[in-house]
Length: 267
Image (cartoon, rainbow, N blue to C red; front, side, top):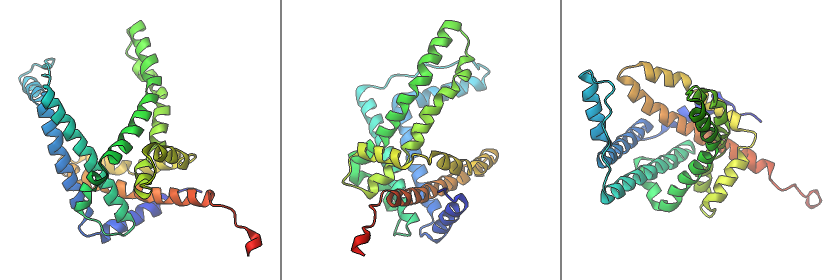
């Protein structure tokens, strides 16, 4: 069974149109909060000041000048990590919001903070898939690094790109784990990740094609000077609601496929 991409996207737009408040404002609020958290984190690490110095030097013609980034102290580093965790919890809250939006349930900006109510689970369900996918990146990093060091030819960075395919496949395999955790609070995070991999078996290409169907929107956001950022915020909400719909379709397929056979003798 294949996913009807047009129908999924149509239903996502319909859900967004009917939602109150408008999903755009919820996505904008998330963008503002996470941007503030990111800027504060960069300030604590010293990288923000370094970027400012680098830009100033570039404007003065010193294009090769790259300032050193000052190391944050122990307290500063802890605060930076805390800000990053807050951003991850807000991201999980947005996942909760979009899933409720797709299901035509009551949803609003308050859902952005729901991730804090499942603090450690919301954190682990994002960290574990990212870590497992990053392990597959070693298939690219290790051999390519060796070849670059041995030959002093940076073209190996390009030639080795096909080695990243297993990592991309793993990323797609784990994409449904947060949704599974929300619907199955009794399951452990590793079990949710494993279940996502099983549900996505044979359907990763479908999700890839679904996301590529948003490429036109991404290009439009890139070519519009100022309004592109505002459009990108709406597109991010549009994509996430559509992903929630993909999860619903995948969960339905999985439940149907693994449903126990009907006992004809009881009929």
